[in-house]
Length: 428
Ligand code: NAP
Ligand code: HSE
Image 1 (cartoon, rainbow, N blue to C red):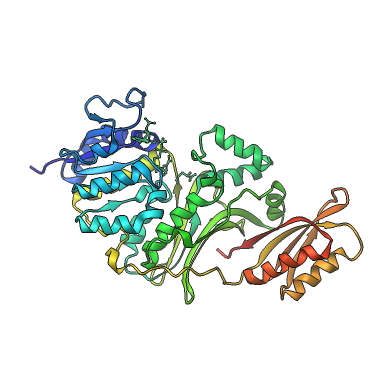
Image 2: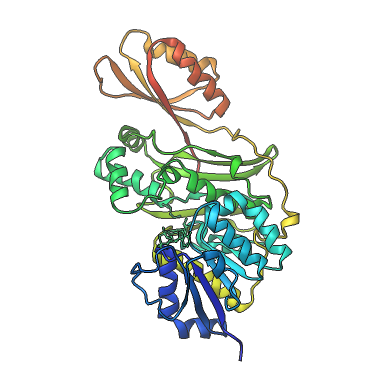
């Protein structure tokens, strides 16, 4: 009879306890599908006495997660603690060096150290799986690595941070300002321990960097991701965008160009009627484009105990069945160094300016745009606020460089008050 696959779980929080729950709920189903039992032998967390809503009494307890990664009765280490350095990295390295395969949900760790860890795994004849690290329960790593392996991938894009999508859609539906909805998200427990990881676009940037590595055969290059968060988006931007038929999304886009790998994670306007535009709340959506497949759209829950543990268990089941693939879909030595390229593809932009209400103000703004080679597509002026009025401009396609020229030119006009807001309009 085939021996059971023995799991050691480091981290028993939202995700770790979710995994324990699945293993305890479906032992026969897992065994029937894998052809062998899947059993937890050891667990680790900081606080041994905390009630986690699952019975841990049958498992060995380790106070030190690195000790768990060295145990002889563990075949696969599940790293479900988090953090891009420290104990999480130590656990992965220890596990690989002691002949264990690893399943992790830790996008931060892999975004920072993914290539070195992939090399280390291969040197030890081991595997790292990380389906849960990107878009929670959506099987996007599997789709890219396996199902679309015959395609040259041209573009990967999507909404990959549920918290930001919750904040943006809730601002619109409840008509609440950013700060109020941010507080709601905090009260609901949606925010990462460091909220800047969510609202600064960093968490989603980590995920995009991991997808890029698989899609384009490059080493993970998180430093190459152009990052912009959602903190500057106001309820007025959301209303004005809606007024013009758009939604604002924190959108990640990665594509290989002749100049190198473009990766950006930033607020974008997308058509309200598009699948991305219709994405509500904490749901994630990833769009993959390849030469043979055309386009596919994957949509589902991006976070939470059930969906994330579901993705972890998918990886565990692959290991139990004997599926052994390179970490980023091809041997680490064959991954090329990514040459980061700034987004240069022209796009229309949404501009929001606060203009002094005096004769010739609009003409001065139009002149700056004209001198930067930017043509105006649509323009609206909204109600006055004291001596200024918000003016919205949708440009025809232009480059980011031309837009930067215009943005710096506005200051000298003396009629633009405060910081103008510029958001790319993405064709999706
Ligand atoms: P969490 O609820 O904060 O749980 C973290 C767990 O790690 C806790 O059980 C904690 O122990 C344990 N831990 C922390 N430091 C430790 C140490 N030094 N030694 C041993 N255990 C330690 O976090 P989570 O939400 O489950 O997230 C876990 C991982 O999954 C992270 O990488 C996260 O980014 C990723 N992820 C989470 C989600 C989600 O929806 N939550 C979705 C996708 C990916 P105590 O319980 O004793 O404090
Ligand atoms: N903070 C992340 C999100 C959790 O909001 O999507 C899942 O990775």
